[in-house]
Length: 289
Image (cartoon, rainbow, N blue to C red; front, side):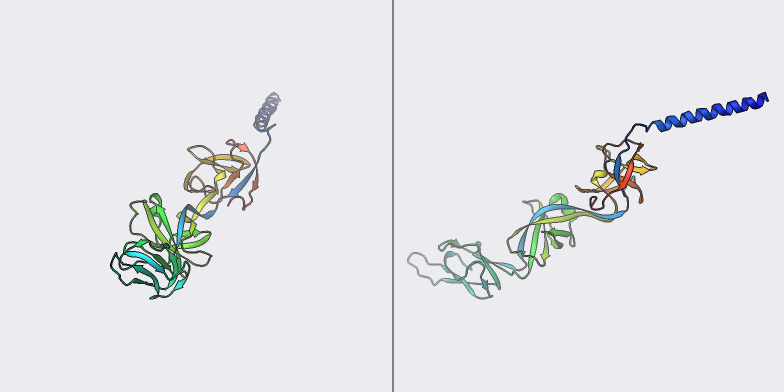
């Protein structure tokens, strides 16, 4: 009987100790308000990085009009914006000298299109190196953009640009950088829109893109130089270090540290601690784009 009583007492002591230990573990969260965080499930998504530049709209067929010989502008037969046909006389050049009367030189339109005057004042000295006007074919327009040297290797024929919101693909690329501006000149055809030759336009050029990557909103990141995120498992937030790929102001590519299907805190991560209990709600997809 005594041995049986000892076993019963010992069992009661063990159970009592286990009960206290469990109570201590649960008491860690007592009195603490459980924060509500917004989460998203990691899944493959496209991401791209753009650089905003200024481009210039030009006619696909633009021709500068020069006189065959030097002299002074005697007469303009056209005005700005006028349509002319190839072979029309667009200007007269006075080649007379003191005591010498020379018949005026006629200047013919080398192509059909719309006139953009570059010299308007009668009597202005002109020559073979100074164009009088430009003739532009407005029916076929293009945008010309200078890509800064650091981004030049990332741009090629077919690269996407968004010109005033319109998707345009690069149709031609200069063979070398401009030595003065250190930019690479690229062109793309414009279709539709109210563009006019000579107009300055905003061009967002895609310099990095992946069609399928693990992408999160930038608000999910915590830390300084070394970045990480909080993954929710079993009602607790666990800190996970990550490495980044393509980065924009709103979205980031995660190249290591996460897997498809992980639930990540995307809003409310800044104040969390590793292992902290959280109440997770799914984030509005419109907020995390």
